[in-house]
Image (cartoon, rainbow, N blue to C red; front, side):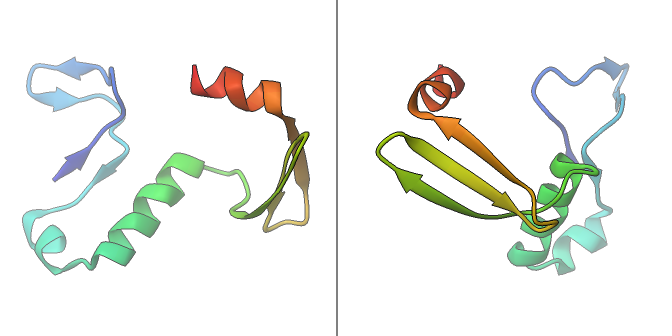
Length: 82
């Protein structure tokens, strides 16, 4: 099983830099929770894990496992949704 991002390049039948690759037996044995965690880890890369969000009338504050936080305004959120 190969998990890729949209627009991942292919050379012939092979994906260039796939997000996650599992053998058939690995895929058959993995739980959904473990698969979800591995995909999230692959997407996150070296960034800290997202722990929680605090929503308010002016925006949201996103908090991460390493103690860092990021504030996003309502306009930031609208821009991300397209």
